[in-house]
Amino acid sequence: MSEATTPEDATAPAERYGVPLSDSRGQQVLHPTRDGYIRLLRTLLDETFTMCADLTAVDYLLHMNRELPAGVVPERFEVVVNLLSLQRRERLRIRVQVPETDPTIASAFDLYPGSEAMEREVYDMFGITFTDHPDLTRILMPEDWEGHPLRKDDDPSRIPVQFSADFTKRGSR
Amino acid sequence: MSIVDVIRDGNEPQQGLKPRSEITARELLREVGSVLRMSEAEAAKLGDIPVDPTEDQTMIINMGPQHPSTHGVLRLMLELQGETVLRCKPIIGYLHTGMEKTGEQLTYMQGGTNVTRMDYLSPLNNELVFSLAVEQLLGIEGDIPERAVWMRMLLSELNRMSSHLLFLATNGMDIGAVSMMIYGWREREEVLRFFQKVTGLRMNHNFIRPGGVAADLPAGWRDDVLHLLEMIPPRLEEYDILMTGQPIWRDRLQGVGVITADEAQALGATGPILRSTGVPWDLRRDMPYLHYDQMEFDVVVGSYGDAFDRYAIRLNEVRESIRIVHQILDRMPSGDYRIQNKKVTPPPRARIDESMEALIHHFKIFTEGFKVPEGEVYAAVESPRGEIGCYIASDGSPTPYRMHVRAPSFVNIQCLPHMMRGGLVADAVAVISSVDPVLGEVDR
Image (tube, rainbow over the protein chains, first blue to last red):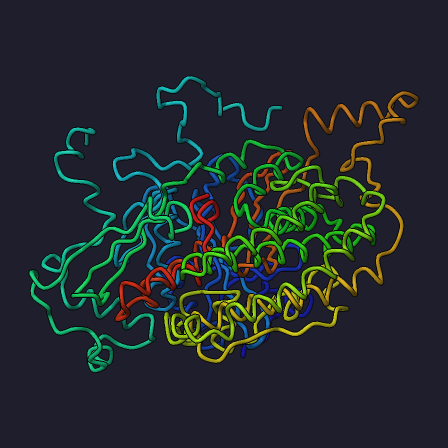
């Protein structure tokens, strides 16, 4: 087990398992690169993190200047994975930056089969493609739906419905 | 693709279960092997996959979305060979109402009304996890008054009882013990009557809010709870006579829908499904929140991972909840029921008439909402169905930038293909029932 290093005992930014580590309200967050994502998951699986509790994504289109550890370049999308170690009673969160121009990331299906449906949900809601996923289809929306609803630039009032809403004015109230 | 094309092509070409002629043996083995943590070659050696039944020996049928035992609008596509289920695929989304998108438009104060409607059988647990996440973002999780914390525990334990009683009712009905449906519903109604007295509503309470709870307990609440605690244990004994010891009941459930501990963890299953495999994992004990670390209770586990274990675990968890509620009654402190922080809690009505500042705070909180510092946080609690989690990313505005709920039913339902494989089609109903999914939460 590699111990977490804190900024106090080294000038380098905090790291764990060789990837930048940050602390969010007392919860540990790892920030691997897209290429190192699966490698990190494999390490963590060996480190008794046997359960993928949650996998989701965030579209940071309207909030690009968020806080990230040094060396992590903010991108539009972020895939957020919550891993759980029953043996150590510990949680770890992984945030992977996924660029808008190429919204793809490797699938965790072969390591965590339970992530299959969650990755489908992220694909459905954000349009992020998971390579080597066994069945990447929409899961909650109808198949002929156009667009990805949880993207910030998706316009729900595009559908001709009786009510309409101006979602561009978010945060102004 | 226009709607005409969809109709012409037949319904739902992509999401459904593909006919056997269109999938390769590799895809099949990958599906099985990854759950068992095996390579495809090792999975092939298992030999429990039927060796290439020809197309005319198998049949794909739809079960649901209007099937009464699918607990709402779950649709299963089953591939059958005779009466044996070879493959199964749950198809969901029929109840999708975009609640996570709605959550981005509602302020933190209004958010409770949204999340409480997800798992409509344990609404108080949903509100609890949302409130805990918001409080962690605000950094006030340590300042919540004691009475509010104990009230939250009281309500979430009673909610666990009402949810499990409903499970006993529907499980009985699905298996054929129809009188059990009436008994379970009757007892649940008694618990809901208490909720109505406390919160004003039977369901969808929006009672647990960021900063505490909405109101204090009404006069006479202790007698009402004691009445419940006296009434329910003898009824549970009756259920034991009616079902647990019955040979028909046992035959119908034992050995059905078996899942092992490794498989359950690989699939991310939590709650009674994980515990039925013998893994003693309960967030109340293993990652305590509120004051569960001061409570004395047992984590009920099974040993075979079958539908009977899941039934027995839920029945006995009602008993454990009764134990916890007794301890809560002994220790319920007096005091505030919500945090006295002017930025989060609206001022009392009487203050508005005499204080300009109170009027401004009141106006700001109800028109604009309170601002939450930037950051992101994941909170999790043990709901009756497993780990319910809430992930909130905040950009510093009064509405969540992103609000995601990790719904236990959504994950647990992915165990269905694994539990049903190789079983009989008649057992499919028992397996769905034992997973106890709430479709409002699956589809959100």
